Image (cartoon, rainbow, N blue to C red; front, side, top):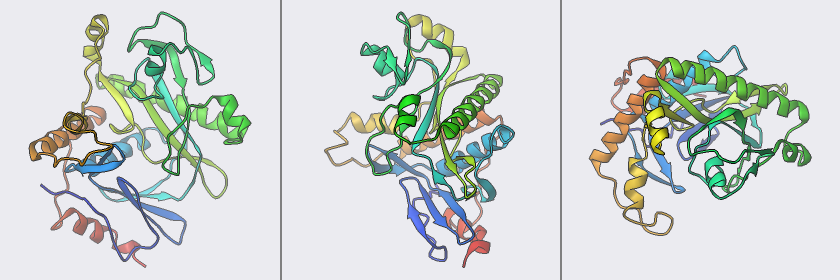
Length: 314
């Protein structure tokens, strides 16, 4: 199967190689962002999932277009299914996470904290008596610090964000207002597809004029948690997690065989890779209501991207 493991294009300037996306900054102030098929977990690249980059780029495209009336975003053009040309931004040092349910698995999730007996978190207080995966009275924002240096994100409150000078009052009001409006639109459109948008993260930056702009990705399977709506009531009654697009086959397979933070990662079986690719495609079609059409032009994915990006060569 066609896989994009690397997106090195020597004709393009100022390359920055991220874990999943590769970026090139152009002299005109725009940025080329190429989504590879790499799968990152445990601070390493585990494998590459065919078509993952196209799925993420096209899912984000759907949502950027569906929410353009709510707030400005960084998109300028889509020259290739794996590529977005965006306005280069100064990324704000706060990641905005919006949650509609008492859910999550990470150390910063409200469910983990709630299970540990915490009620005061992120500058708010949750009531006693909530159950796992229960819908919150209203969506809440649980911001975290954005660790640019590879460190761990840390929970923040609105007061801490202002006290530490991470954002101005005007910036905080803008990003929090945008985030809640984006989440409301996301939940409404997801409901029409038989899905529940449980929680998601947003990344904002400022352009050269200081305007707040939505960046990175929005409401993709990697940045958001979705449940299948038909499974929610029964699962909640049983105390079980509702069904979702479970893309963590690879993560679970690895952790069952080694300590991924200490041991060498075993080679991922081809059938597991193909299964994960199928789930990404299923998620795209369920979220957007569109049929997924893989772009098979070019001898390889990278050849196709290079051809489509020729107008941007120096």
